[in-house]
Image (cartoon, rainbow, N blue to C red; front, side, top):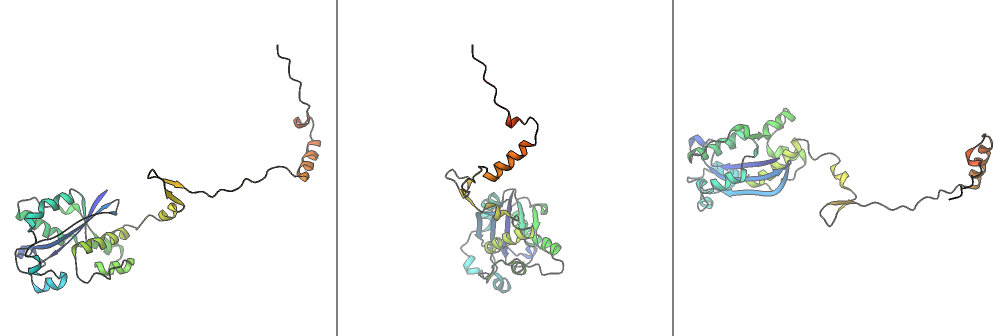
Length: 234
């Protein structure tokens, strides 16, 4: 199952008042695990950068001035996400901004049903606890010390780890099941077994004596019969 963990950075809180996307980060998951494929793009918002937003993500108007506009990257972005489920922290916020950009260009909006909101998942799993990304990283022991600013790709990578923990983490015992296995030349796996010398099975003198005594108590024991002579072959 393919999923896309997605995050955006913006110039503000509301696309209906003219705020725009300035960064998009996506991480591809297959079977809930990162594949290594990512999509990352800074976006020229074609407007100024409010100081409050700059303090959050550190992206200045000058830095973004030579970056492509959303219209220039929309085809590549849409191709990357395809029709996959979108895993987003506070999905309503990011989906509103993405859909505002899409409808501005004449594209159909993405339905909210395509998204999984990890904030809602965290609040359901840990009622009353903080559900922001930093708090969840601390809860699950995920290293986010390199997160001095909000960044779309970095936050997507952290969210991919948080999402894995929210849905139950790695399958218990999965790593144990792989112990003692090594990759074969054909790309499969072989089990390395420890060779043990065969145990001797010859009966001891005491065991033979006990067996003879037991046979002596039996009537017409087949073990004591004389072998019949073979018939002559014609």
